[in-house]
Length: 271
Image (cartoon, rainbow, N blue to C red; front, side, top):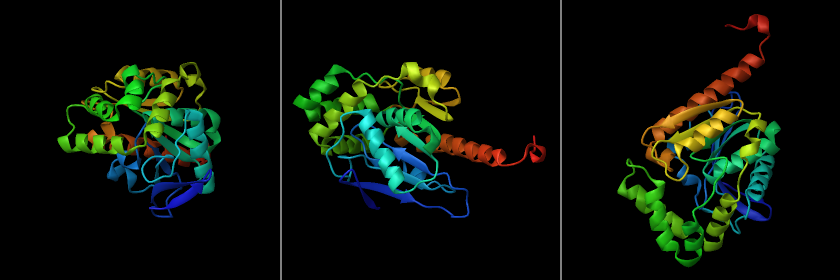
């Protein structure tokens, strides 16, 4: 897995390159608060037929710190990283805080995108005071609380253990910066300005960003599809990876087909 220096920091990312003869439309995966690229399932990170990149944000996973204190600052990192790799227009998928990054990126850099995927996220991400206060006072206690909040009924004990282990590995200042950035994020009045196609994925058991958050976004983003994962919690892409991967694959295939049709003269299109 490669590293690249962005904004004077070494950032770590995973890269899956597919057949160069396929039309280029990379999928870029951005994790949530206190997460890392492994919060995306292997089957999605190595999705056949597509180039896929999964990024460890600054201060997360194997990327150097410091982290960032705002969604806009994280958008700047993703922008500089994509420019450094000279990516063609791509689909940006974000989970939770990553979804805030994806929405903001779509508002500020729509020319760089083919679409966005918003998984277990919202247009507003107000954070419970117990999380913000607890990160500064009792990281382990907050981690144990979030394990119960983050997972639905289909989570395994091993998944919960790994979540807590990864949570406690994140530096306290990075973790606090993430959640503080989420707490002030609110673009509800700008959803109608998102011009790129979107796929919104929500879980019926998500108590952190409930199903109603997803439906709210899908109803207000002009070109949005909505997928509901029955029994999915906040970490739905790890709990039910096949269903989430299938939903994202279908979205990518539709975007690729639409792009192909757009290059075909109307008289030659099949309807």
